[in-house]
Length: 262
Length: 263
Image 1 (tube, rainbow over the protein chains, first blue to last red):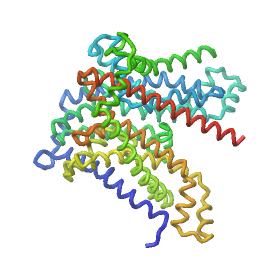
Image 2: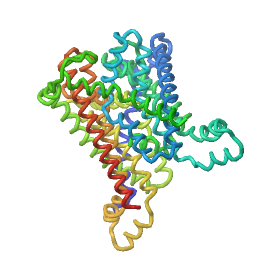
Image 3: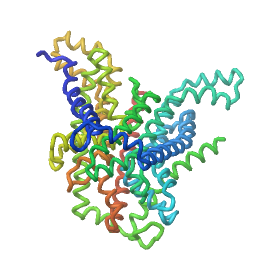
């Protein structure tokens, strides 16, 4: 066979089939069978009828929602100030905000834990508050970067035009800058919301006994219950699919995902 | 208004960095809890470099990150080139499947890969294969994503010109395409390194029992009660912080001098 550029796709296609598609199929197989290998809907019925698992689902949605909101409320002004300023050292300042991402998250959470222990005494008194603080602290930079990227690329003549046509600066913000920055906001939300539903190790490290969706997988994993664990993973996958459908995560030119970290 | 903006930015930076800096300060003391300052000491740093366990864990994490990043960069780059020069439909399909590990939760990726490789295929975790495969699955799609835009920016006639001048397709690939997209490959590699270093979930579900990455080690250490190890990790956190600052500074200086040359 003659060598062509497109034949380079073959190893990657095999790789994707083996390690991306096949694991998902295995999840479906285990999620919809019982221990003896027979098809069964007990896992899914069990998930949606058990008060504990449903409670965990709503609790993690709540934590993820509050965490995302906190990140957005703090990150938007930061991204806006930096994106619209004409400071020369802008790129250095944005670096300062992103740099913590490169420090191992477990070490950052260790640092946070020491501070929170000093402030609160016993961490177990405020599980919800600590979870939100920990998650927001961990994922905050992921919210800044996509919003900053969108705002700093905005055509400044649009804002000038709005001002020339008599809009106040508040009106200009609400009707021009904010709507134009929605793609960045959506991309930021999708990078914070899902990890906040699943990253149970942040909770564990902050001496938290509350459960989120990720913790369920963790506990089924340690009890070798692949069937129930797979069902939780499938439920999470469903939520992720819904989410990416609404935030456009499958966009072809989704360069924010890669660009957000470097 | 200007001072208000500045104060806000500084306040956010202070909150972000306070825990890391306070921990860095206490890593140079002999106290076991922050807030209880006793006296300065470099004992934590000595423990960090002399404890066999800690040393192995750090070296293991680094070796894993480098190995995984090399494999991911090869797969991701080849995949991006192959997909980019394929028909629109195939390109689209590959790109969509590539998005799955990117948007998926790490817990789900780690759990599903563990089930497939360990439970279904019966591969022993001690062989490191599940761990390496898991990390490559996490990293390669990000390399793919950072190479693809560079291919879009490339002048497509360059490749044709190389062929017209008598290069074989393989030569045109290695001498023309790859040098043109090298910045994307390098940033993809760097991204893969950071993702592998930061991963916790895929490693916990796929790693051999005796092997620890920094993340899994630190998480287990915070649950334990060994003060000596705990404070040695403060030293590790401080060292990593300094290395990150150094890398960022060097990268910034380099881009600045490049811009200077252009002017």
